[in-house]
Length: 239
Image (cartoon, rainbow, N blue to C red; front, side, top):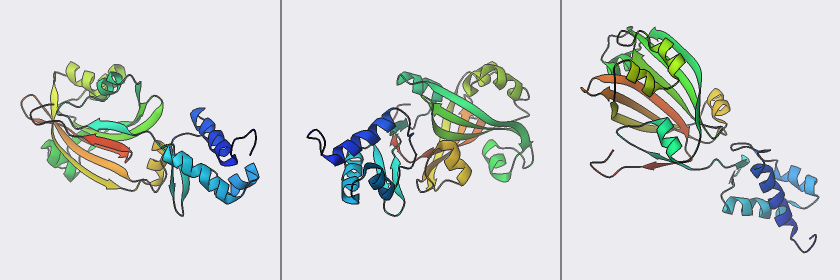
């Protein structure tokens, strides 16, 4: 005990400061109990008390056999008929950004073709991108559009920067979500790296179909996010 403060609290405050200052980021693994006990020259019981305090505060999460990790903040995700990532994030006072990993034309596989009501092998625009909120990666998105319907989508997206604006300028003023299928699985190594999550944290997978104002299939997509997310179902009759 230094200055009347218990050693475990000193350790907890030190780790919390490293997290608050972004030295340790959400998803990062903390040093092991052995490493922390040597660093602070205390026994493991003291280290466990410090980690328990951080876990109670929701700052870290600990799993037996895997260690302790900086917890990612829980973010609400409301299932809406008109999902708009940028608008939703801005409404919460946060900053949305995206990074495009792939933007190309490729043949539609059977699942994509069925969702978009195309023939298997028909050309589709495929886009893969990472979404960020306040600089932290929050999700990986896969998007498919009919190339025949939107032959200039690739060039337009590169100048507009958002799917919604690209579709508006392509003659689709509005679109809604017809169907969402939710599942979960563990991330692959590349996904864990992109989303900055541990390999033992499941991803929430949402496959969906968006339609235009006439009810025609517009987009088949898939989003992959960490499971530290709250799904909020809107009241019946509301978007």
